[in-house]
Image 1 (cartoon, chains in turn brown, purple):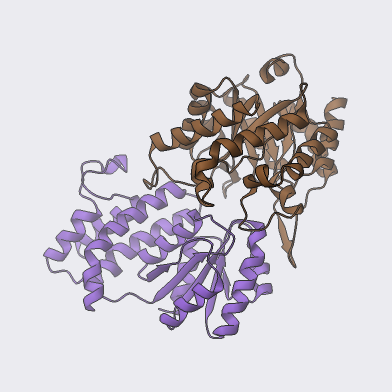
Image 2 (cartoon, one colour; image 1 turned 90 degrees about the vertical axis):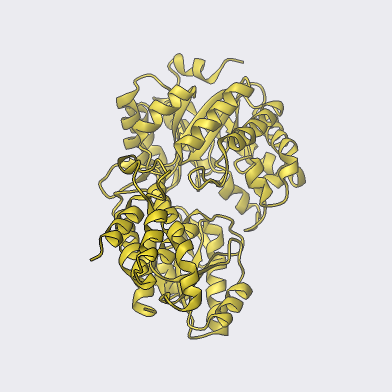
Length: 294
Length: 222
């Protein structure tokens, strides 16, 4: 099977999958429950999510391993099962993806801050290394390091995945639009700073995920393209900011809302489009339709 | 005003912890909050003034800059570190009664939610503005909040949540606190929370940033 970047070099626009976390909640994941533990205890439910994105027409499927690092699993006393849980995550998505779709092993932030000395660079490196190796062992083609806000942590994760696996390494950060209209992560990193640092660290694909809906992503893609004309860009956009009402959380952007922006975001320079929190197989299906027509 | 206190306020505002700290670059090689606080105490400056005229103005300035998106989380964390370094020297004076904190703030991330960065930011900012802070950690249920309130009459409670799924938990905890202690004041915050949700669940205040919590406490306690 070819690599993701080879497909992009052919001029293809690829479609990624949609939300996992909010999808697991729909299937009954409770607050306080470990989502990644479902890879062991409820693999059929996890497979169902992966399969629904295959059916929706995604070219690549993520894994249920966003919080699968040593530090995140430690919150549930599962830190001794990092390999088992992440390998299972990749195997489940591989089974759904078959041989003609890519599997992206999801790696999220540890929640530990280097600046507060809650963790050392070495400890972070080892945690990302352990998780990446397990995802590769379960059949991941790429590692997608996502929802990053601290550039140092992102850089360490990219390095750990690159030096210890043969997977393509993708890294996306989460930006907010600040008062002046610019984009910054919670830790103050701009898309420009991210691009320079992550390309240098060896990420093959960079981009943004989560955030405040697909419209803001267009501005982020434009900023990345201003500083780097060629690096492949992946966007996993939220279906807007969540609204909570009487115990029910809804996301404002419909599949049509998302699809309506796809042409613009591709023209801005994005190469891979998918969803984050609140997006569903219907969103991905609509994105697929637009991409097919481009 | 005393020059040391002006310098101390600057150390807190810019996150200068001590002489050895390389951060911020423009203050490299200068004394930090650690040395200056010690010096101020040695010179006989009232511990209360060190808190009120040194640490608090610095904390307030960084809080306002954070709200205005002029600085981001790392700068606030460095300020908080500088502040807490100074507080180590002041703690004995709080215990002896030579200096008084404005009141007590109890904070925790609600049951089912393990995220603590936002909660920690608020806790540090509130402490730096002259309050005693009781941090109950993450995944905290109403029983712990109520017990802490009973031990600290008049304290205000802060509830934090990052996940939309734990907003229901925030609602339940607010209700249980109000049922047990109708006088208790509850302020809420976190990415998915807003003003509308606050009034719906019967909380007393919503703040999108730590400085807003400080301002709420200043109107209710100080």
